[in-house]
Image (cartoon, rainbow, N blue to C red; front, side, top):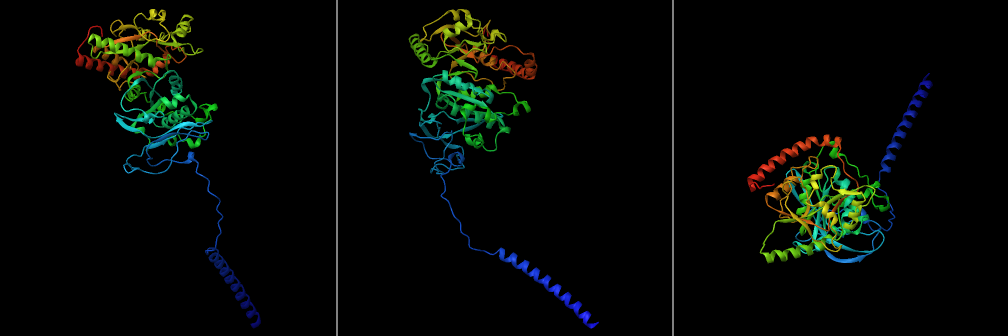
Length: 484
């Protein structure tokens, strides 16, 4: 009996001993596994950083001289370092960048310059001036350039591809204001950079881009163009693939029912022109060729006549006949080509089937029969914007001394230029109709749409109310004038 109890006790002790031994071994393993042990690390040579993956966070050095450099097949902004000059800090100039355009296939002369944009709060809008300047913008003389004429225009991202055609026809600088609220902003910048990379070289050399958007829809921080466009997801640009891979889709304007503040964008582009004379036009209106130098010769001749006549400061602007052409035909570039298209029934005066009175300038049929020498530019007719042409909405070359367009008027509400035309009439401006220059709308004849009219009706009601108030204010300011 005693032996039996002793054997049972021995078994219990044996089992308990083994359990404690197992617990000890587990604890001992965990402690030793965490102990510090020697480690050998083999380090491979570090490759040079890819400039496309670099982000610029600080202001950069002063402009350097132009140099011809070989470049990789991409468009990118490069950062030579994070140096900050004595007069600059990252907090005071967070938007300073160096821009180096790159060519995909061959070396090119590149401008390496400091690009600093300015912002302005304009009522409920934020304006970003010179967000993407033309190459060499800061190498130009300060003040107005008297040797050229700026084409200023505006649009949303859906229409920016027209800039390629505009700059290929216009032998001078372009100032383009882009309305891009909220999610439209990265899409618009992406398209601009694609045009600079894949479009005609004049997009890079001649076009300066500005931004406008509601302040409440502004980004938390306005980044550099390549950051804003999220190019890391899309580079390198594939020019042959077109815009498709860039996912140019944004629905914020339709979802929030945002009207297009066309006169805000129109004024910004005009006011930021670097030349005395400016053609404030629309983005789908293509100019005929060789206007700039011929126009400057014309105003030089007129200035001599004014001097001899003792006229100090004439009030005048230079207007363009405007046409539209069927969608299967390319836009004419010369008057001879335009006249042929009109005779063949392929081209008509602009808004012929929408608002014929809006482009009915004096003796317009005679204008078509008048063919001056191809290399000349003169004045076909001097007129006023008075009865019976109070609906006339001419596009013209003027200066920034002319009144601005009222920024409460939207594109959807129509009549966005009418009040400015009325003001020019009250100020007794002369309208010089050019004889050998014209504008032609991107191919496609416009017609009235009942659906479009219904959609725009609320905005038209608002525009009409603003327009009527403006006319009353202008009459009080200038007094009435017969015929206006």
